[in-house]
Image (cartoon, rainbow, N blue to C red; front, side):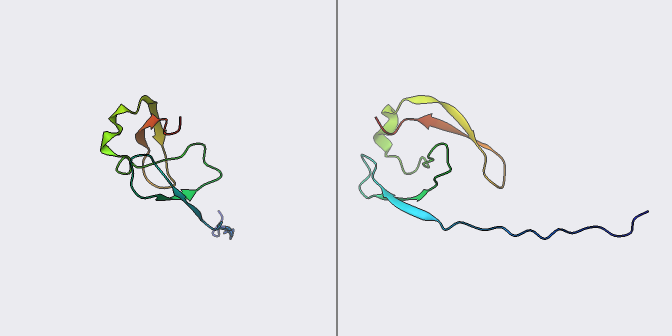
Length: 81
């Protein structure tokens, strides 16, 4: 029986975060957003979208899974035409 265990030290290199000012029609001020070059889609919280955006056509739903916690369902809409 083995009374010891192996521990492997790992180092992670964290990338610097890059931000952009993003303009959304109907929102008075630019929104500061995280520029994630590895993301497949951009994510905007519904509280940022103006109330009159009910005309946005939903293309479906997606499941978003972060590094921690459970996945959440989100509406998929097209903000750029």
